Image 1 (spheres, rainbow, N blue to C red):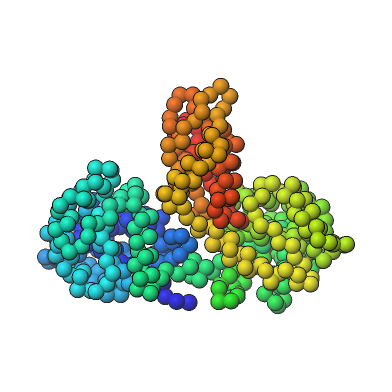
Image 2: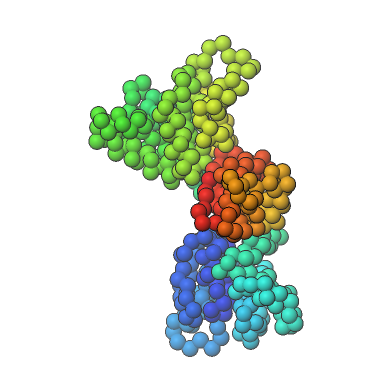
Length: 455
């Protein structure tokens, strides 16, 4: 696997480098405070944007005149990282304006001969963003900085786009998420639907115990494999019976196995819901589908034992697909693959579909795309209201995060306004029509009224 490109965040003390680092990696990994010199160690983390990965590195303040031992060491570490990085993110403070320390750093950074992107942090309102056009920011060799707000997230998407453009220019592109992390794939289903046999057929060897006896697999069994240069962790899980039956007569071992299966479901990138298509869909299949819809994992429905279906013709698959969709409507966004673990039919297509579904988890709409989408959606279908209420007014719609995709919809607040849940479902379906979200759950959070609705 190629090395992940490194992007170092540098700048003088207290310009918000750690706040930006945390915002871009979407977690609170570094300590943030108003006290200068809070960051003393070097922090690294992967940042994922539009399905590609870079390694972000947070550094301490590069202030001149450091006198104590700690400050001197902080500067040494930061300068070492600057030499190793592929691109430098030079952060200045939009609120304090261009400082003499920034000018000193400007000269030092120029000598590295590294691509440099300048961003003015703390541009938390329109006035501060407009101030970036003032004369002071044109009095040095760099162009006017990109106005961003780590606190509010404003401009951070544009910043990452610039970083990726710089990396492409120096022939050091960000790496696809599929080439960096092992994709965790859990196989879920009732007992004896062919989960272990399916995995054995997929990897081409008998790695998992397969038997016609129910509950052969007692607990999740992790196996790491590489297919066409990509890494996967395959998790063969215990078959899940109805919990009423398990609680009534199941063994302690079976109960523990089911608990671990449920945990595997929640931490997986993709779950394969395996059905025995030679039998009618069971109530338990429907329960598992409902659990998967809530888990946040991507889902592929595997209609296994296709070899047992007699008298197949050109329309047989369409007939069975309609049957599955009718009985599992909560997973109408999940692709269906008809397989035979016994004969190997279509099993070779499995990893290609897994890769596509994982990539779809990182589909990212920028602010312009999100605005364009909601404008089209409103024209196509005006926001619906509750009985006796005025039509709600949507004031903002944007994508909050990926993996899985989460969107936020802001309504204008009025005393008699509510958004009908059916409209949220319409938006989800329209998103799927317009963009590549196959196999991926979409969450839309609605705000601006007394009770929020999530789908």
